[in-house]
Length: 494
Image 1 (cartoon, rainbow, N blue to C red):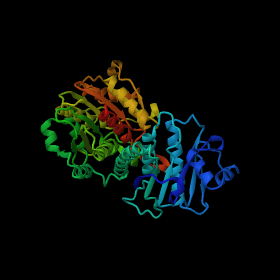
Image 2 (image 1 turned 60 degrees about the vertical axis):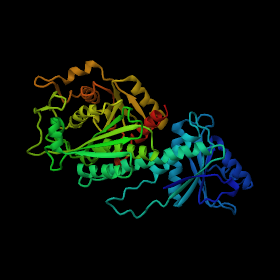
Image 3 (image 1 turned 180 degrees about the vertical axis):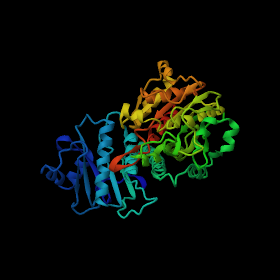
Image 4 (image 1 turned 135 degrees about the horizontal axis):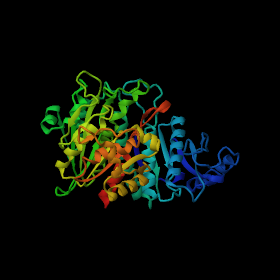
């Protein structure tokens, strides 16, 4: 998609399809009011028929307009004036994207910066328009023929001279985040026989080759063995695909500044190992690498924005399959940290590859470490599929992430990691067990990880319920790319 700012006045505008806003009770927004006057009251006459009331996410396509540069018009309902929050604005935009896709136009223009949004300035609104259009036109086509391709290729955002600088900044941020989300979604949607650990490593190398501030190193199994990563390597033993530890290093800030380390779980397929998962829905375990895909997406956005930060991306990647060499319930593993782990369930493998990666992260002397992982089905039980679960050992870091989630509308909910939960991870035979029983499963998983993050400020984001959609609309979401990119934008401007 091509995005640009349109500065031409509405009466001079050339557009295949123009989006304008409408408030509840059929109150025209500023752009719609100007067009209504330009067309001799046509819009007032059409909405007077009652086809659209202006409720949030209502749309009305007008195909026939008086002669001029605007070929089609979509009225977009935003709800009650003065009570439109960020979520309502985004919900209306999603409906607008649907109307544009249905109209089959190749180019569209959005005159929606004039809609009043609580805590949403011109820059934020422009960014949301670009993000949601980018997300809406995504189509998976890597392994299937798409006959009904979405033709939309260009989006313009109408901005006045006074709005231009903010709108341009929002457009640039939105385009970068949209590109990052697209990468994360396209990798997540690939099947496990295509997107293997080796393939994921190749994509990381390709990404690094596109920007001179980004480098990539791939640690092979013999490198991990030399480092003592017994926990990570135990997971890969049941697979014929070699494990990879993908290490990306973005140097955009002063060399003396400590890096922000992002860790993403990269299980390219998770059958559960010897503790085999049920067959129903197992195909969706190709999405167990969405944390790793998000790290790549975030770094794609970061390089496009050229942020003045130092960022390290670590992606432990493997498969978890049953095999004669696979680790078994009751096995004792020795992690890179030296802590021993009793494997009570081989399907709790994400924490086994993440714990060694968290230990490895110490070598970078990080300012903060943030991991993201499709870690526990228990997080879906606790929170559903709306927010991601947030855990951490530092209140400021967690509060910064919560603030970024509000701005990005990529929601988080903080969960506890109190010491009382540590009792559930006690083992008679090792320093800790890899599961803590059925109660508070997402919490005990985070408590397990916290044992390997005691030397730095750390946060864990469980995206098991938010990294992909299930059912008829099955597909990766690209979350938490918007959230983490917003956090990094905040850090860059702090």
